[in-house]
Amino acid sequence: MTNHELSSMYMDELTEYVKEKGWPAFRAKQIFEWLHKKHVTSAADMTNLSKEMREDLEKDMCKISYVMHQTSATDGTSKFLLEMEDGQRIETVFMKYHHGNSICISSQAGCAMGCRFCASTIGGCIRNLTTGEMLGQIYTVLNILGEEVSNIVVMGTGEPLQNYDNLIRFIKLITDEKGYNLSKRSITVSSCGIVPMIKKLADDDLGITFALSLHAPTDEKRKTLMPIAEKYSIKETLEATDYYFEKTGRRISIEYSMMGGINDSDKDAELLGKLLKGRGYHVNMIPVNPVDEREFVRSSREQIEEFKKILEKFGINVTIRRGMGRDIDAACGQLRRKYGVNN
Image (cartoon, rainbow, N blue to C red; front, side, top):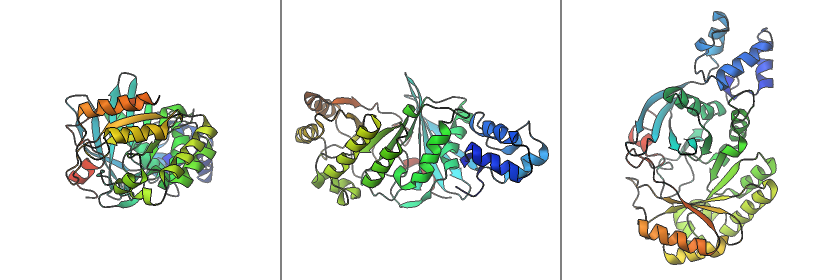
């Protein structure tokens, strides 16, 4: 957060901000509503403020520019490329489901985690996004589409738990009843598994859903896919997610990308089933999206169905994520690389 990024401020901080300018305290509520209820991205649009106030506020607005977007002809998914004030570009994905609209946002420009099947990590992590930039992705997309969302997933480019303070501030602001007022239960945060931060998130007990990117049933195989596995074993990681469940009562979701010939065998399913049996977790099977720079291919439909059946024999709740946006550079980080990382 910059010192005075307006959309990153809590109401009490914004109140102090306007008081320091010598303005009446009620102006803070007006500004907060313009930012978080009406989603304005320029102070010039705050029409119940004076021209002088708007000009003064503009320098502290979070600046996000629309670059382009692609919309899938098959399912209506829209993938947006947005540019920050410093030229960094990030991706945001808007998805339509029968139960409502979801948006997937990025938490960092780039990613340092090095997962071998992901395009987001190619080139590493440039920087954390500010709270305003995380919120701004949502507000910019909703303004363009004229839509609202009922679910948010922090599952785009970046490792959210490496940007912890901005993540927490984002969650508190997007759920503020004076602002967008989204239910905390409608937010999912996905992580590759930074054990101490999972426990910290549990202790903070925000009421959100936590999703663990697991992608392999053994340490040996996980190490070939995810560098984080060199630091934290699956046992340690699942102990942390068990702790999260115990502290919050929120069911854990396991993200498992299905990669043909890599982690999708019947034996993999058996091992995963034994690992998760009795935990009450939900497994979200994700047919991997191909990435130009990576050699991975998605598992066959038949093998995905067989994998699901095996897990269900262990009493595990399983869903297969609907393949969305395959015709629009669907893999996370792909659009950002295709159209320039930080032009």
